[in-house]
Amino acid sequence: MQLNGASGPARWIRLLILAASFGIGVYVLWYNYQGSGRFQNGQLLTGFFLLLLLTLAWTGILQFPRGFNVPFFEVWPKLPDLAKAIGFFLLIFLWTPLIKQLVPETPVGAVLVLGPDAGFLLAALAYLSNGLSRNLK
Image 1 (cartoon, rainbow, N blue to C red):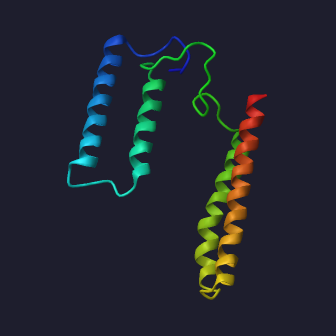
Image 2: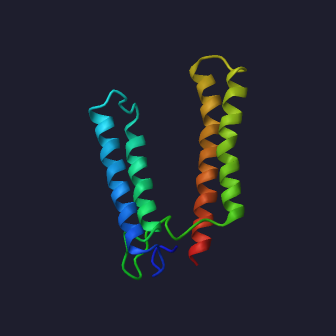
Image 3: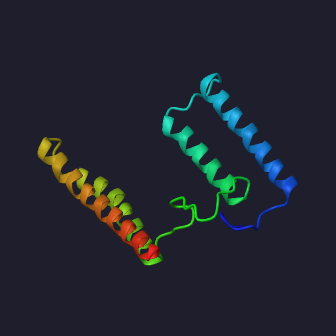
C-alpha cells in the first residue's frame, strides 16, 4: 500500500477502517476527558491521533493529490545515518545514570551530566537530518 499510489484495500475495507478509527478516536477522547483514566501527558493523545492519521493515509482512506509530499510519510533516512542517530540517542540513557553516580548534586554536576546529553542529542539530530537530506536528492 502506498500513500500516493492507486493501490489500497477494497472500498468496504476502507469504510470499515474509517468507522473503527472514528470509534476509537471518540472513545479515546471520551476516556481522556470524562473517564476515570485521564491521560497524564497531553502529548500522548496528540501522538495517538497522529498515528491514526498516518494509518489512515497508509491504508489509502485519506488520499492526497499527486505531487503532495507529507514529510516522514514517503521520505525515510538512510539506514546507516538512522543507526548512528539511534546510537547517539541511546548514549544519553547510558551516560546519564553512569555519570550521575560520580558527580555531586551541584550546578557544576548538572552541567557535567546534561552537557554531554545535549551533545549526544545534537549529534543524533544531525545524523537524522543528514540521512533525510541525502534521501531527498
